[in-house]
Length: 184
Image 1 (tube, rainbow, N blue to C red):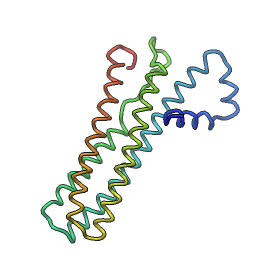
Image 2: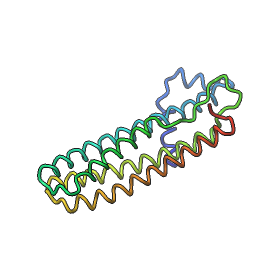
Image 3: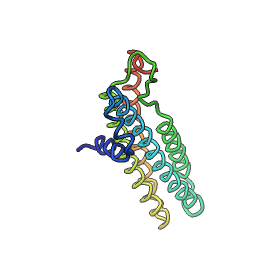
Image 4: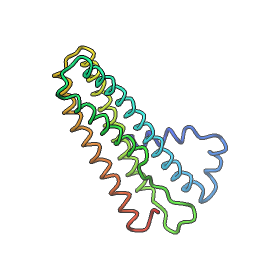
């Protein structure tokens, strides 16, 4: 079972008895499953947003330590990374999602929604990696090993760029669907 299926199964398992019964109504099952995928997409992105916000708190703490006890030559780099991480977390939170209203003629298919969920699952992995790195940066700042912090900040910048690229690829999927008239 891949990551996308784990999230979908979690949503299915959390349904009430009434929701289970309504799944046997012809035509309703597919509609409900697509909505479940959309809901999972939104929940995953909110989870990634929360992880990124925790990363920002680690970076802010490290910035304060660096300003108070470290060399002032590269503290602006930490501040720049904080702003970049915050911008990225906002982009993730407000990212477009595969919603199509009930009255639209052409609907977003289950395959496209699954592709968005695969991107979101990868976002979770990368956000957790960033969180691990920021936790190490915070611990390094606590020990006042500032030369190591700046090396880790440089690596974090590269990793954040990978998330930016992932979001761009995700947006291309959405925009591709929008260009063909499937999402509005």
